[in-house]
Image (cartoon, rainbow, N blue to C red; front, side, top):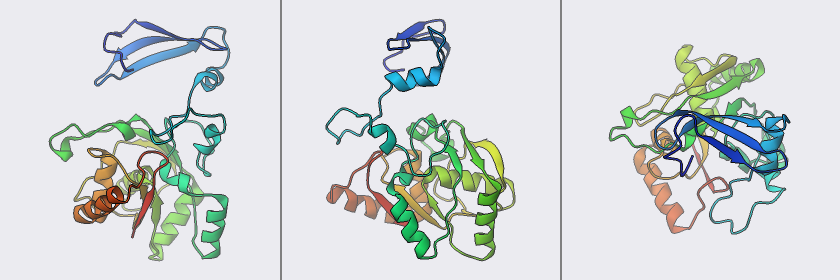
Length: 252
C-alpha cells in the first residue's frame, strides 16, 4: 500500500465502484506491505468486483490509458487459472502461430501452473546476495508435464524454460527430489544467484529485467555475469524495452 505508512492494523479503506469494496488492514509488514482483508459491501463476488474497478498495469513507454482489450493481451496463451499478481511475462512472446511453428520443428512443449507473487517485484536490498529473501510463490505441476520433462532429461535433450518463475519452480522441485521433476502442488521461495547448480534447465527465454532484482540475478546465474552485462549493454544501446511488454533474450 503506497502511500500507506500510517495505515496500521485496524485501519479501513474503501474502493468505490459498481460493487464497492471495503478493506481492513490486518497486519503491517516491511516496505509498505500489508495483509488486508477485502469484502464487497453488497455481498457480490469479490473477484468480479475487483475486475470491475481494476486496471492493467501498462509499462511507462505505452503512452495511453489501459483498455478493455488489454485484459486479454496481458494474459499468456498458456493462462488457465486465476492466482498471479502479474503475468509471467516471458510467456507473452508466444502466440498460437509461434507454438505451431515450434511443434513443426520438432520442439516438444509442456506447461506448468505458476502463481506469480509479490516476491517477483521485491528489489534486492541485502548487501550480500546470499541474504536476499523472496516471498513464496505457489505452483502446480501436472503428471503429464513432469513425465515430459523427466523424459527429456533421461534422453539428454535440452529443457528450455520460458521465464524465471518457471526456472525457479523446476529447480526448486528438482532440489527436493534428487534432480527429478515430481507432479504436485507446492510453494517455493528459492533464490537463484551466481554459483547455483542447475539440474533441469539448460536454456532460458527471459525478458530484460531491472537492476537490483532477483530476476536479473537469476539470468546472471545462468549465463554468467560477463555475458549478461554484454547483453544488457547492447539492449540499452539499441533501446530495447524492459518491463512486462519488453523484449526478450534466449540464453542457450
